[in-house]
Amino acid sequence: MRLGQKIADLRKKNNLSQEGLAEKMNVSRQAVSKWESEQSIPDIEKIVNLSELFGVTTDYLLKSGEPSFELKNEDVNDKDKLPILSDELVKKYLTASRKSAKLRALAIALIIFGLACICFTRALRYSLDTKYFLEKYGDRLTSIVSAIGYILFIITIAIAAVLFVYSIMNVREFKQLKMQNFDVREEKKKLEATIKNNDKYLVLASILAVLSIIGPIMESTSVLSGFEPLITRGISLSIFSVALYFFNFYLFQRNYLSILIKHKKHLPIKLHRLFVYGSWIYAFCVLGIFYITTRLPYGLYIPFFNPTLFIDFSIIVYCLFTYFFIKEKAE
Image 1 (cartoon, rainbow, N blue to C red):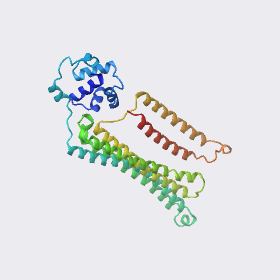
Image 2 (tube, rainbow, N blue to C red):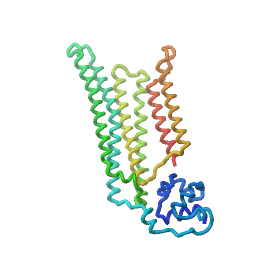
Image 3 (tube, rainbow, N blue to C red):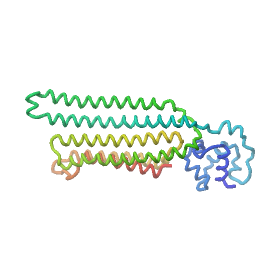
Image 4 (cartoon, rainbow, N blue to C red):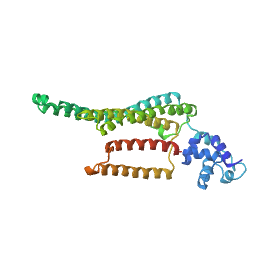
């Protein structure tokens, strides 16, 4: 019997899933799968940890033969057997987590929508700033309109904070799910199908994010004048807030479901460091280009280049790259 088959047999005898064994060994599920399929071999430290976990000698794992002593089924059943989640608790958690994901996503979207409210009220103030209104009402009306915009922004921030706190309280009773492993083999396929089904929200968020760039593009081409740029900017921010809602709902819902099935993807250490350092370099380059281009003399103006549009496009590119990079490289 080869090492991979021994690990698989011992894991099953101890009533452990690959995810459960991976967590005990502090490795990814893919690493355990490669051990059992003979695609890789655990190092010496992991061999020792496996022997202690399963109650066998290292000689048994590395050589042919039987265990040096029998497994104690009583100890296995009492200590290593995972409790089974009830269907009622699973349904209750899924309902609460979906509601919490919606509230958190809405809280983040409201912050961006608050900025859109400021743009709309500034456009209204610009349209009221005419000779007729100034003669009849003076600057009082325009000042009131500006104040309304900032008041709406503060209100949206307050509502967002309340929603975020309530979303945390909504799932507070399920803390034990994070602290303890459970046997969810019966529900796991359904949960994984639910995670894949949520990909439609990511697609919708990407489409809306691209549409939100139309406003800055129109503004950069000087097609708009007067208060029209403020209107298009407000519309773009409104569309972007909806895109953020769907994107964050996708992330939060996926995180909640991953907690339930105990299957999260992580980047290897080298790729994680590369991603972090690359992100900082990318951010400094984008901000550097934005700083330089906004301070160029008039004679050195770059045609068809809008610094604001450049920042928006850079953020979207970074988000898309991050998603596909983690999806392909995470284990």
